[in-house]
Image (cartoon, rainbow, N blue to C red; front, top):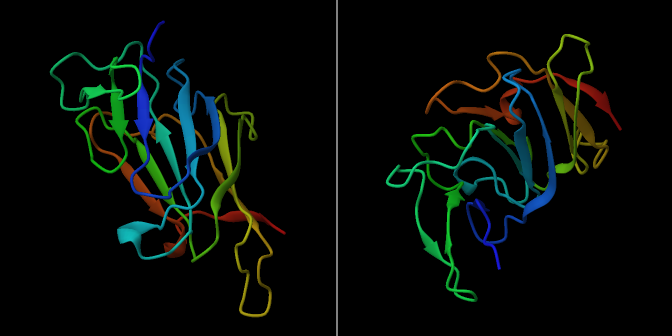
Length: 178
């Protein structure tokens, strides 16, 4: 039996990494980037229970070379096969994850739905990420929101300079609200 070329581990217990998975060329380098959601992740410093997180992993032509800090060996306890994990709880020299989005509020569940497509016809795929339990205000609860991250040459920083976008800080515009 053939083993996986790469394994991606969630950052903490109960994150539910892989609730949604999609891919597309968000930075225009012709390599598919992988987008993963962790619906029940708890935001920055685990301060927002079930806020949700979305991770972008840069596309690459091969797995990291042996001995690289991002290639940590893991023995699968069921098959005894050597695996190549990416651990989202630690920064790596390869820059994975290249981008992390943190849900804005407790229980928002960012990453309930993900989609990738060129919405603005600029030649770069754009990312849509929903937070189905987003509260628009104190009286409009669980209205939901869809965030759009426009793709482009700088959406995924080169090298180990990973970006983090905290949606609570208002660094992304929400285009559609439920």
